[in-house]
Length: 236
Image 1: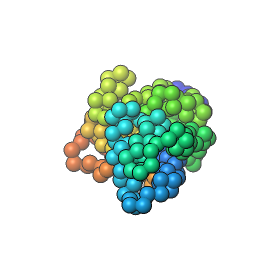
Image 2 (image 1 turned 120 degrees about the vertical axis):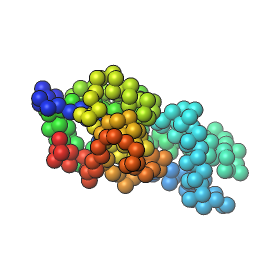
Image 3 (image 1 turned 90 degrees about the vertical axis):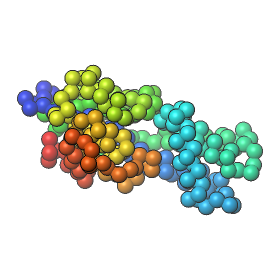
Image 4 (image 1 turned 90 degrees about the horizontal axis):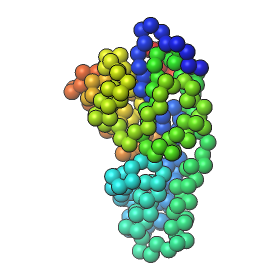
């Protein structure tokens, strides 16, 4: 439970999807089912995935992150690659690949509640996740982890301006603030560029659009890498 933090309080901005609980594995399963269903005779599965990746980038610009955008990406990819017209029945089938994701229960990583319990007694914790407000709020509520956090921030994008806005909103001291997450693109690089510290928690199934090299030559913040979320107890 949330208790009074210690005197030497630091602030931990903590990512949710694929940091506290599984997320991308469900999308990967849906994509595999979609590619199998499409059964394209000219494009290899890898080729279809490359097209889908590009369409997803386009849909993020139009629709943001989340299941709504992902569903649009599957439909648009089908229309782009299939020789068949998109009938209502086919559209319903494609929507079904995405809707299954919403039905999955929260699958927490090892010792996440225990680690948050420990950290919340020593530091200020802010959950910082991006995506659909409705979807992300629902996940937080179902997870039962909300009491461990001093605040919940659901943002449209995690970039340098967003981190600076959060810093200003909560009066964060950069040297005493850490962004904890699995995504180099959203959690690590922009936080470091904004002058904050970062903790990288690698996940082998991190979304392909969130993967990139971690920049270590152009930031002022400190970078820490841990093997799993529970290891934070050894550092904070």
